[in-house]
Length: 149
Image 1 (cartoon, rainbow, N blue to C red):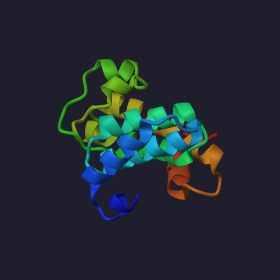
Image 2: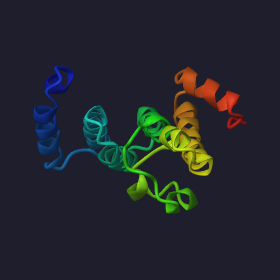
Image 3: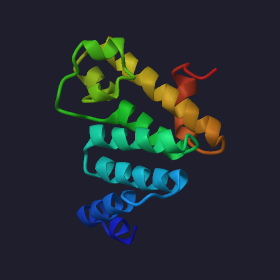
Image 4: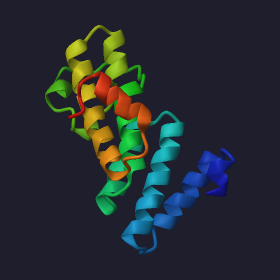
């Protein structure tokens, strides 16, 4: 974790990958996978980041910060690759996370943007349910966009 906090992401990734090799508690492994996701997020590798957040949540479904980070990627990410129209029909397909809601808005595709914003809303709802006192900005966004019941 020291390498990560000092911005030595390549070294941190190597350390985390090595830590996943031995058999360890699924709870501990979930945090290792989550941290790998953080590094990929920091490096702008959002598809890889999402993969590791999903893997972390498979082992520990009580990681609100993973849900939050996934929502942020869906909502804000600005990738150069244009979404295919197939993504709107299945926004949960993690292999198609090449572009997100804000980018779709900039490209004038409100239908795809709404699909990504809806996916972001679902992740933020899960994060808020796990940690109600956190994610105030997300909570406000959900209210403003009328996505919060």
